[in-house]
Length: 333
Image 1 (cartoon, rainbow, N blue to C red):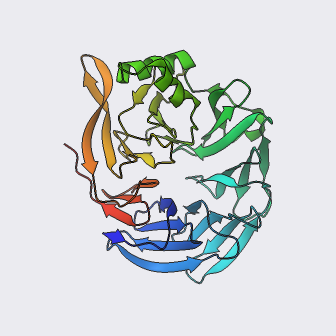
Image 2: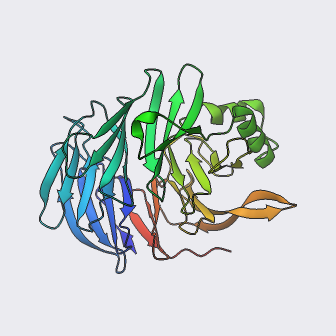
């Protein structure tokens, strides 16, 4: 199914039951899609403040979305009757991520004001707040599948490095219990393994690029880190002393923000390329006793680079979006 949009899609999210897909666009619209039929069931507008990140709550008719202008509130919207249930106030910069806890009514948000907030749907103000040091930039936060752990990805502008720290969601104020991102030497080694013909300049370009998001695998064993370069990293979910798996064969010379995600069966990486293709990799492929990423599917048909990708958590359906949103039943080879 192809859903023709009004502007570039900025975010996609499937409801946990798999029937509904929500998407937001840079034209300040929110669309509710029936994933069984591919039909648009609802279209809502937030013209005054715009729409940024959008996520389902546990109820299939209720979503959270961030404002893009005038203020940086997060809004709790009932799509059934187009009614705002609550405004969450606390951020003073653009919201970079929203993540719903899979087990309760709490959610996380990260912002360019260098803060991470923990909220409850029943309360207007954050129940906990983590303020990052001033030299940290581009924060992104998300829960794992258990809801007991969350991670924060950010860039240390002093050290010119990236950090991915894990926190206990039940003890928010205790600080991180682990820095899960491997050392730079291990990351560079994994890039050389994946692309032995790359020179130092190409590797450094990947290391210096914006690392804009990450995702825990459904089984918790791996973490996918996405960058605004050719590089994707699949890291071990428990140990930072292991060399990650680097995927370097997608094209992103323009350093655009391209979509990527992990499949619900914790076996495939799905990512976009700047030539409008969507690529599927088996990241658990073994060659000569070593893990490697095997390209096992290419999806074509988009008219522009794909900025958003999401996999249905219950059904064998995937959504990809540029200006148009496409629902696929993916096939791998």
